[in-house]
Image 1: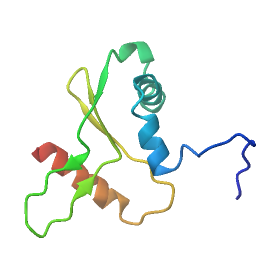
Image 2: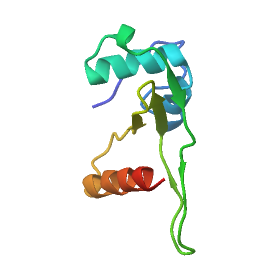
Image 3: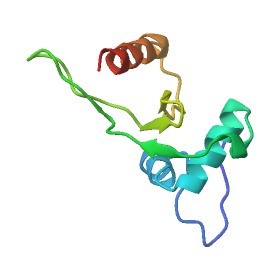
Image 4: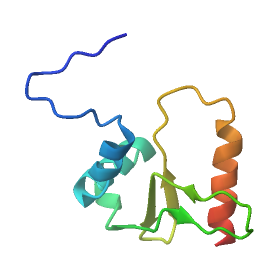
Length: 104
């Protein structure tokens, strides 16, 4: 299915780079989290972007980079990933990211 865009369209927010850039804007980030978590944006006082590189422990371990990592007011950390294509091992990858975040 092909999408059509207006003549002044620059880039789709579905592109990884564009999505990450949008998330650098706190107002956009709070609106996105509010919509996805189904909470009022007024319940989110502040969010802080965190380092998205997960720590490498072993020499042969691959560097893992999250799309967007947010620290909420209550110290909850949220990993926001954009995945448009089917990824058969997504559950395993998400579990790996979560375990790395917890280990840190």
